[in-house]
Image (cartoon, rainbow, N blue to C red):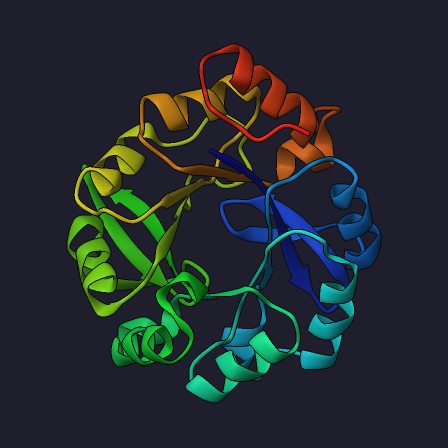
Length: 249
């Protein structure tokens, strides 16, 4: 099981909020990466939350600078809508790319990316809202209802070639009230690839629940590290003590 901090990036630096309203500046990227390198994280996820709506490329020079300081697997997302962008990000040092909005417009992007670079490089990012008991998939930073239910879309992206799913509850994002276990369970029960649970972690027990009760293969989190004294190392120690297999140095 993996513990993965998430870095939400805007032009002002790293930000965090609640329910995808990421307005509060919390840090800058390079110092955060250097700190996480020392705290035994398994991976890092960096998401440029402005790129899609601004219809621009990722900043490859910045990704190159960030990746030089990142000594764990590095997943980058935000604004990815074609194969050349994926190629440039991998050349810049990303190990994986997270694709969200573009996949709803053209699912072949996932297939082509997996065929060219390997499915292990392609992460399908799925943002969900619970509407009358059903989990709807949203694009464009959680603002556009795609019409897909999460089970249908999860199967579709895996069939297309995605090697992993980053699954985020929009309502739980930033609340630190716990992951949406039912959402996680619905997805892990219908796909065979690893699922990264995201949105709502407030303590280490929430992480244990996501893995043991939801079936997640990894837990992504941001607010818990920015706004409390809890650390990825302590998270892994807690999980190990409570029966979850983790990698500790």
